[in-house]
Length: 493
Image 1 (cartoon, rainbow, N blue to C red):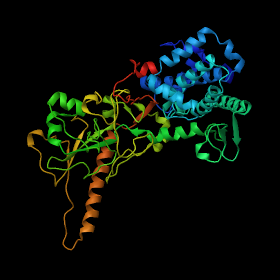
Image 2 (cartoon, rainbow, N blue to C red):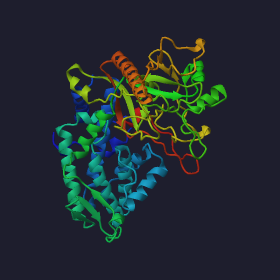
Image 3 (tube, rainbow, N blue to C red):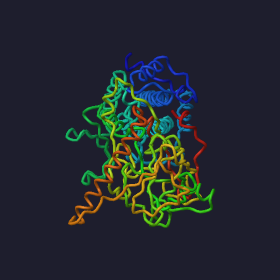
Image 4 (tube, helix red, strand yellow):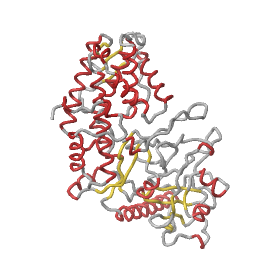
């Protein structure tokens, strides 16, 4: 199968349920078979979405890499297809137009996902059909093509682990064409020491920070390999416990579930602050925060303090969207046990700090999850907060409490799922520092044992990112939304 044969007609890319070429259906099935995980509907959906999106972007890139003479010969159906790619984008018109404006000014804005680059490239191509001689449009298209060449098949989701020779050949072919176009355009100057193509007539050469450039690494597969590494760093054991500290444990246990602010207000007429107040007066977050590390102090102030420990698979069941990705639970193949060693396990106790970045591959000190990919801002007043999700307690969940915490009402105790960590017995002559160290070890050992028990209960199962770039937190400045009704994740795939 040559790189030249791997394309999807533009008109077919825009169909809600396109009839995929036989070669692509075969490639998807082969990828599912080659995966480290046992085939399941979730796995197949993630892998199919990955290949449809990236081969679709490759096909659009090949159209944009055509000769400038072909611009005047574009057929009406291709124009319609380009417009449909724009109209069916998961992003708002405002967001897409901002990216278009940034691209025209030589910037990248914040587009690094195939779901962002595809409609942007279609938007630029459509504009070029109307003004083929426009130099700014031509430069924007070339810079976006360069950016797209680094994003092609480079997505930290389960599909990237199945990328093979057909994709590497296609990436190499397109990368070569992009470099040839950059050189032939006369609009860029190549800097071999940095591997950068500097856009002429943009910025002041005396002030390099004002110049606009695109950087292409020497290795065209660098981005793919980096995203494979990020994928494994972002996977977790399905039974990995996450911890939610609260000063309102009595209310949470009485209600029998953990809820975001809007649901608290609607069901019980009051809202408990779950984390902390932000400087502008809004509650820090409308949705529960979790940490992969147990902290016996932070956010546990007051007489009603405690920690809810819940396995990640249970959270993902209710809220599969986080870190700009959709997650699912899959099972590792017995002959892929080596992969288990690449999945991080966080079983420590200690301070979680404040405001940790919740991005793919990070340790997970401060994590939030959402029931929908279209929930609004992570900080918002109650009337604009995400619809959210509720998480029932009991079953595989635990209450983790210290012996020094105020006792709970016996009628709401979750025994035997209440884990009481007792302090280390004091000994005559023991310094305060030595006692603290022994207590730290005792708490740490208790958490490590609890994590091991929870992980073993779902041995062989893992929470993995099925697709990335699926979330949209954009809210217009006026607080309204110009977003049209958008398809579900399944249709977006």
